[in-house]
Amino acid sequence: MTRYDIILYGATGFTGQRAAAYLKEHAPMSVRWAIAGRNETKLLALKKELNLSVDALIADAMNEEDIDILVQQTEVFITTVGPYALYGSEIVKHCSKYGVHYVDITGESPWVRDMLEAHGEIAQATKAKIIPFCGFDSVPADLGIWFLQKYMRETWQSELTVADGYYTLAGGGLNGGTLLSALNMLEKGEEKRLGNPKLLTKDLKHRNFIPKVKNRKKNHYAEDIKKWVYPFFMAEINTKVVYRSIGLAAEYNLPHPEQFMYEEYHAIGNRSAAFMGAAGMASFGLLGQLSVFRNVVKKLGPSSGEGPKEDDIEEGFFKLRIVGEDNKGNRAMMTLKYNGDAGNKATICFLCECALGLSLDKERLPAYSGFLTPSIALGSVLLERLLVAGLEISCETI
Image (cartoon, rainbow, N blue to C red; front, side):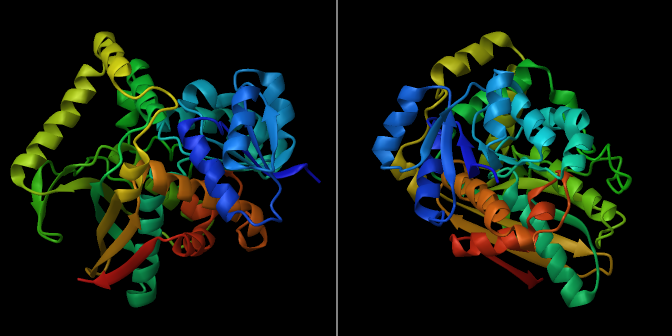
């Protein structure tokens, strides 16, 4: 038996502190968990601040020996330390090696591709469930598509073939770790890989279901939700995770569409705001390739360990509506809501409930292993846990 059920690594960072507080409140007393990081003084201060009666473990993410020892002590490993391309590789390597289940909140799909190629076969052999993308990117999209697929199969015995997701966001803001991860991808020149819809399905047999020509609309009026929209800034991440879920479903002989396309948009108040939002996204992507611009953003933006004020986090909310059509021409809309900032409250809830599901509901989970997605690894278990945690989700025919 391992020493712990769950280890939370990066517990003293902005996101890590919130995750520690969440586990304290929501993890049953029977769960043996610990906090971990590289700074003992900060860990002990966090224990005191949150009145935690858990162990504090010292390890440096860049030190292979430290991570080797740390990973072997737990069944489930949570890490909130980004950029993951800088601080996550040793952790994924050793979780794969020792059959330890892994969850994170990365949005760095090129890095996940690299980890999959390096450790995918080992993770399958050791029965490790490696589940990246357990935060706002990409649980809502992944679970939302899964739920809409389920609705169509039960209602019409059909398969979802095309879908558009529309996000409404309010409150909160970026934390330092998220910003640094985005800048790190730009610095490494990952734009081409980020734009490849098949990035996370290359290892799967069923990978040709994604159209070769992208059909993303630009700024437009979305009649189904009566809003102006523009391409969502996380779409390049979320769509790839959804595509991997469908590819994995085929791999495991689960119901799946033969052809499928998914796009995402940000819903906004009016046409001018939509054009401004799209222009802002395009400008950031272009300027982000310049080191001078990245340095200015790093200087002026939140640094690692910083984030929005508590009131802003609590007052925020997000809503995702996914409009889909099946292979028989039927149409339906899935609506998913959560009160609290998407990146700094919802993300914590999603991440911790993924970890708790792996720990507490293991007998109910499918036996799949390797590099998975939240919906494939946890499915109905995750949905049930999130409903208790405050998520609202529904489907209706349109």
